[in-house]
Image (cartoon, rainbow, N blue to C red; front, side, top):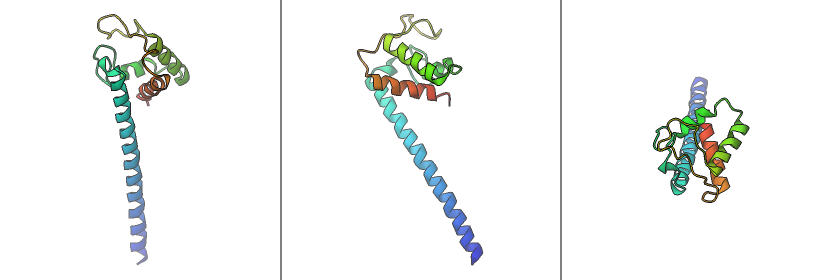
Length: 123
């Protein structure tokens, strides 16, 4: 009887861990879907994708570009580039025009959320 109790306890523990892991994955998936929708609404995905080069570099490529820069500095540099436009950092940029300034079109909070997401791709 004691063995069954311990087996049941261990099984319940694993089940709880599995459920909490699924909840974390589900929350992460919801966050990613929300960020993608936000990127879509603000026109980001017209030029960028997570791993594919469209017009501008992929977000993963951008994350790799900043991987050796301290996170706080990388965020500041990337937020500045998004707000004020950027040109000449990536060989994959098609058309050569560079990224236009978005500070008048996209809210600062949105830019910061997207930059955080991009930089987290290195984690």
